[in-house]
Amino acid sequence: MTIASAALLLFLILDPLGNVPVFLSLLRGLPPRRQRIVLARELLIALAVLMMFLWGGKYALELMHLRQESVSIAGGIVLFLIGIRMIFPPPEGLMGEIPDGEPFIVPMAIPLVAGPSGMAAVMLMGSNEPARLGEWSLALLIAWGATAAILFSATLLYKLMGIRALTAIERLMGMLLVAISVQMFLDGLGTYLQIAPP
Image 1: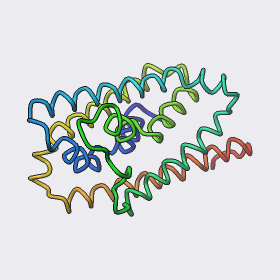
Image 2: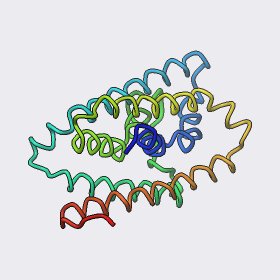
Image 3: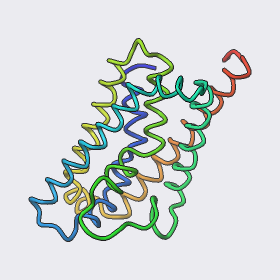
């Protein structure tokens, strides 16, 4: 996996376009300046959490005596479920009911940006090829930067594209995530069963 393909995968998992309507509704009651401060804080918390999972994932796996294939299969299943929810969102939204008040860590940083699928993906990348942690960190920074840019321009995007276009893009991203999740599952299963890829 190249840095560009890893960054694209992480960008799809972070799902900024799908988060635009949720973030707008969460920050609706705050003044514009406070909205930017809260958004920056939550994005930085999400980045710190993902970096922690990227750099510490290998040691966590060793501590829990988990094999890399287990994380690949589990990550594939979680990604699949997230992708399905993006394609067929439940009435209460992708991540369920959202609490009132100014958000802090939950639900904006975790699980909307740094969700279980993102944590599993970076942990898998870091544990599979620990020698490339610097490259994976760069890929994560690129994906996070693109996510931050989209979320900071959420109001403008919402006005320009409208809810229908954003929903269509989110469902397309969900389809891509489902395809990636199936590949992750098959890779993990193939490694476990020692099946060589074609």
